[in-house]
Image (tube, rainbow, N blue to C red):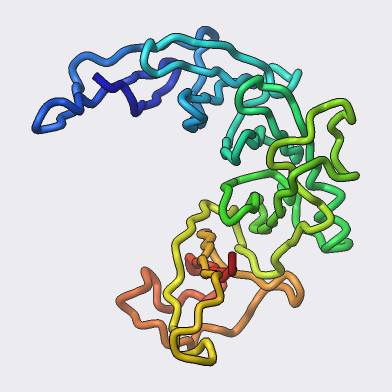
Length: 280
């Protein structure tokens, strides 16, 4: 029997299993294995599959759970502040990127040892890119995070979207120690990018899908460059171009009344998907 998949709720983790030997392949929802992560009771904010284990973000800690035995293998603190909460987890090769609520520092931990490999602070980078633009208190607070196309994608509560290209070793901006191993998906701040196209409110999510390529536009029939395109999308409320500020007077766009809850609302206030095309 192969035990996998998990379902998280408040202070405990319930593990359900799927019997791959049965013809109907039904989930056993009547007999879950329960893992209690301790007190005080708080919500489990996030989880992710890492190798053959499950990492759970609970309070300021990461709990590593073995799903087959429903046992806590180990736990470690992501920050020394006990009132903090781990909000986002994203796996990347031999590492896991972690964000903490109301914290502008991203942390990279080794997937096997839990060792802290790198810290990346968003405040100086965004201030350098945007200058003295006033984006509010939550300018660099992380609201979404994902790993696509050899990059770490980060969305903030103020609608800013950043992309960090992974490098094989430590870069000069990293706060990791020189004695640590040269391995893992480190973020290269030298190749970091910030999008001037963003959302008016928090970035809610990221998604990635293959792009449809028109071979006739490649300059020759049957031409194969060995590369393919991916589309990375961000979702959030509203749209803003940070180079020119907020939009006004754009109520006449022909989007169709059936596609909008309020056809009279401004374009910048409607929910938007922002899409980037990447060649990998």
